[in-house]
Image 1 (cartoon, rainbow, N blue to C red):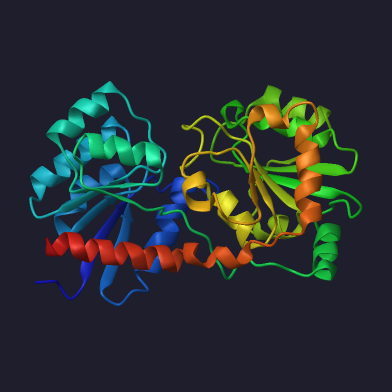
Image 2 (image 1 turned 90 degrees about the horizontal axis):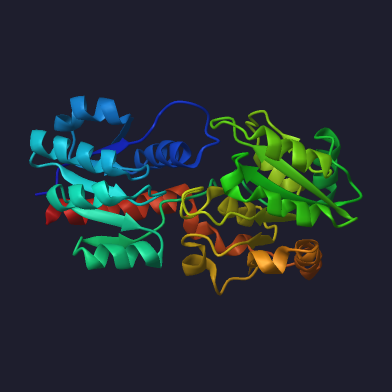
Length: 332
């Protein structure tokens, strides 16, 4: 019998600003899940989750996972045998120890966002679903007209007479940000990078980007949507699978405001958007020797608008899919 209020514990790092993917996912999902009448959701840090797991029906680990999260899941399951446990492969740091532990502490369900991890789960006979829990605030990240865009550019001290190619994320070498130097080679392009404040920034990388003419903003931006709205194009250059969540939030946010996106075929992006307009997948070879600048001009001049396809990735849409999954898992 389904309880009147399904009690959901979202487990995630809870410190710092929202400019880190997994923190933002957990916080936004908690808010949206609590707007669903039969759900009560709460966030706890991993250490807090051990203390309070007895009070919940669903234990949903949002971050990672790593061997530590598998062990944590096992401890909480021992404490509360009725607890339904879910591991989300948002940004996996997986190794031999994790492989061993998951054999002893199997989650009730695994959520993956890419074909690689789907095949991995099937091979280990783990019950799994392919589903992105990355979302976007579809009321906040919206397209604006050219007049409003020009006013915003003036307010943010951004050039009106250049194509603005934006990137938002960690200022770390594993994000492959050096590829953005290829876009900055375009005489009519200004690369703007909004750096995350939650991770240590690579000083040498920042200096190289700034010396090439890239504009880097290091402070937390509570109205980050304004930078997306002033941009002409968004670039996601990351290759390392450990460097970002499987479905990068920044790509969804850029698509939501209606600007074209140029991205590497990272994580689960090709599974979600391979046939969609407004997103161009490139490899590193295509981007070198100024090729990225050419791609930026191509995408901007094509005037593609991808805002219409993003509604299914609103936080509420994601929360509603999760609520259905939670109910199915509890009933079984």
